[in-house]
Image (cartoon, rainbow, N blue to C red):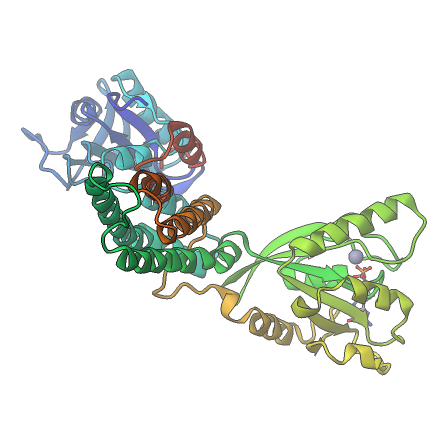
Length: 453
Ligand code: GDP
Ligand code: ZN
């Protein structure tokens, strides 16, 4: 990984805006800034962290009226010298100023390279660096709060405490590796069993927050299920407040599934409209039904939609049989029409009535949905929430290693033997914060960032 070059990139998105920011980081940030920025009042040297008014210049030609700031290491995001130029937010001034920097010896930053440097220079640990991406990509306030918690080091500091316990045990083991004669128990074995069990319990607790964390990051997967023509597409459109799915008078139009993201009560949902499920011989439709079946398995919640104006029939029953009983909300549609009584086999489900076509009762539906999601709504509040699958996998791995360690401790295995699982557990925790993360994993993580971050 190159860290000697001075990198440059626009820090704000492409397109037109009031202002745009171009950022430089590296040893040569100051000398490059000096060559392309002409302050309104001549100065001997930049005062660090102070904003100056002046012009971006190409030799004697003025490129734009700008503000510039030089921030000297180490009190910067990357812990290197950083310069920022605030110019007018049009594509032209931005690309011209970036080009000036390149001509003065800067190189174009790769995606995530500023954050990568912050990580490599010890300004952030890996979990915190990932949180930067989490904040940028957050689609709801709750997801943003979770990412911010991680950036503030909530996860990292929790793990640090656990690691400290394990490192102490490792040190303890190592002092005995050379001394313990065969078949002699490790001193304080019971005490260590308890401590390891406590660490494992906490690792599992943290891992368990991933259910909510994942929903928060990727959205709660809500599947709309129902036989053809009950109003699935109408409901989707109505919740989206726009007409994306095709609504039609004929049964069976939505052959494929449609997914849409929206935020409900500050909570991200991924709404999935499926092909209508019914007995069919049409191969295309059959495939749609099969796809719906697969989607059901990965859904967090199913909205089982029926047409309240018609008697519930075998086709509804067929759909009902697809529904996971503990994660299903019965949605009775078309309440604007005369209602037909519901059969008793539907009475066990939580239920709301709506009129999808006329946007009736959608807020009730939203409330019912949130109630059902209950604690899983994943509002991070002050607590810790794991939302990266990478972290979750590492936590699982750690807890398995601790499991093995506990068994070996109980069976009075040798310190050498115990040390293997213990190191494995420590390595897993270290992968989350970046001490033991392989380079290729780092590359993948940082390449997911946008340029300029
Ligand atoms: P899907 O096949 O389940 O996706 O159903 P659609 O959303 O395509 O709707 C089928 C038909 O039912 C359309 O003619 C809609 O206008 C109609 N429809 C949907 N919601 C309502 C409603 O609340 N009341 C009434 N009266 N008709 C509705
Ligand atoms: Zn439809």
